[in-house]
Length: 426
Ligand code: F3S
Image (tube, rainbow, N blue to C red; front, side):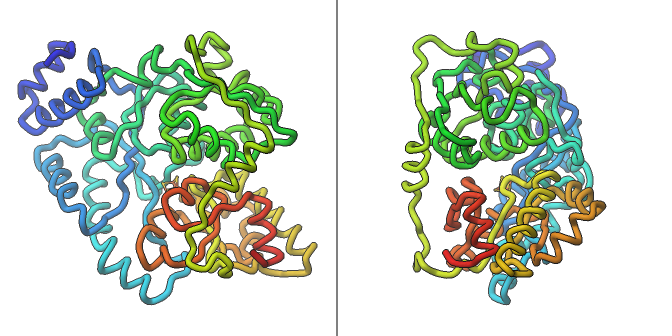
């Protein structure tokens, strides 16, 4: 092995902590070497986060591997949260969908959740992709080294929190956590965190977070953008509104491209600290104005069989919504329903959020008001729900660019969604 290992790391590799841990270490070292890592560094965050939260019947090799880890006592030293559950009885389904979920898709859900508990799952409320919300409590500190792989959480942790994490893949996340080290390359290094793109925002109004993220993701792919001009719309303080915007923006950059880190001039921690010295020499430039955002919007293919079909479902909250988003949407829907002379939303609508955020929401007066509009709340992952041939045929609308990218769901801006829910039409 050409990577430098400390005596402790070498000893683990040589089997000092048992055969299973040696194999885990070897996997991480090989992964690191493939990406030119120079060493292994300690994972420093308090908690870990796992991307694999669903008990798909076809994932038997994963369950076997998890069993090996549990049997050999190689459980995580870190407790962890995990991505959202794929099922929730609150979400409206038909009989066929129920049968498909229960017998053909997520028939291992209970078994897998049992494995996760043995491995160190934080608690029952731990299933969400927005684990960094205050109500959930898995919020890394600036400079923390993580072993996460959920792309929307990785890009948030790197960019908004200033933690350090590569875009790992599922299972490697738990491996890094179990052994306590991850390979040092890419976004863990100062050089890897430099921006190779400067993106200039020249729009005449606040750009839609999910659309702007999509445009940048598709342009820069896996590179790091330094975004200039967004502070004009978001301000210079990472308050609740700015963090919520960046959550949705980042998820779109990460799914429409493969962005793992972005810097927003005058706003995100490293950009505030280091300014334009974060921009690498020879960085490319991308200017985004109203016309460019429109071009990107118009480029989305509609893959519904009947593009004029009436939507059967609306999913909001991919990534999971924040408490403030739930409150704001409650007010917006009430106001628009009243303006249009309607009492309930015209399309079955599901708002998704972390279980802990939903609990907080339930404590507010907004919860009953939202319920009265007909909107359902859930902790589900909309993508896991939709990613099968039965649900895939349904005309679903969303303002999530991640959901649009990975499923047949059709993207609309927040205002267009609001119109459809309260006025109808396509
Ligand atoms: Fe979260 Fe599932 Fe969307 S994990 S980001 S709700 S695809």
